[in-house]
Length: 364
Image: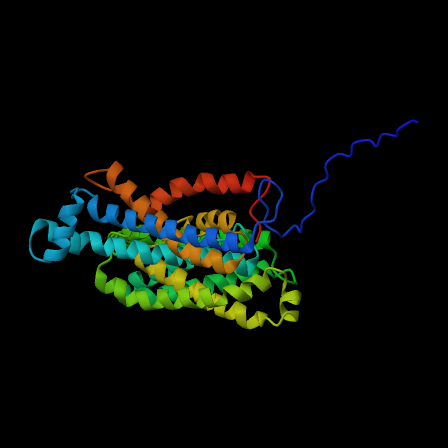
């Protein structure tokens, strides 16, 4: 009796939903396991933020040991360590944390609102608008402090955002991501050119603006920082509260509206938060390039497209980048220093080229 042999069947791959997280064995990731991994990632970032904050307090033109930093922090007297810590290191560390969170969340917010993975406040001209308005305030109204020209920064950021949207949608219909990028780059170039022209025709008046425009966290004292901090914190809170609605907007305006999301209200609140974050951060530091572009991309690769986690991770990761860049700028140019905006630009430009030339940009 002849036995029929059944040919061996090739192993079949298990089909999964494209939106389901999978590991290398093609098994869906347990949601609880994914949540634990994300929570652990937050803990790691917080530890990294503590470490770079300690390095920011210790390293500079006059290096201090961590024990000397602690003693100077406790003493708060006229000793050398105490003066360095309280007058120089603590203010710039606080500024780095605040503006880092502001620019990081602003980048995540503008990418979600425009559904454009290459958007950030610098590329879309928001920072240039704020900087141009501050230049006008300094040159024509004699303003010399952050508390004096912060409102100019807010107005400039809001007007630049509105102009980019108008230019991007001038052909009819909704603005497309690539159109917004082109409009933002063009507007930033024009405003940057006019700002440079104004600073050159009257160098004495605009001397402080030229130094400020490089993007530095070293020239702001605690008084100015605390005067701007409420606006930055309000912008962060609004952005975090909008993160759930932004998940719906990522699916498209029509589908988001069908799911109950108030699209128009979400966009208006998002633009308000973006103005507060980009305008306030630019008023303090003059704008720090590429933070709002790099951090949300890196974060999205780690946690996926959920805007709630992207916002939380960006708020903690961006200060790590800003403070690390500031420490690097102080160490490699000792006894002088290189402004943090220059360091992030040197790092960020290759990242932008990689994103543009890559076969797959992280999706929203």
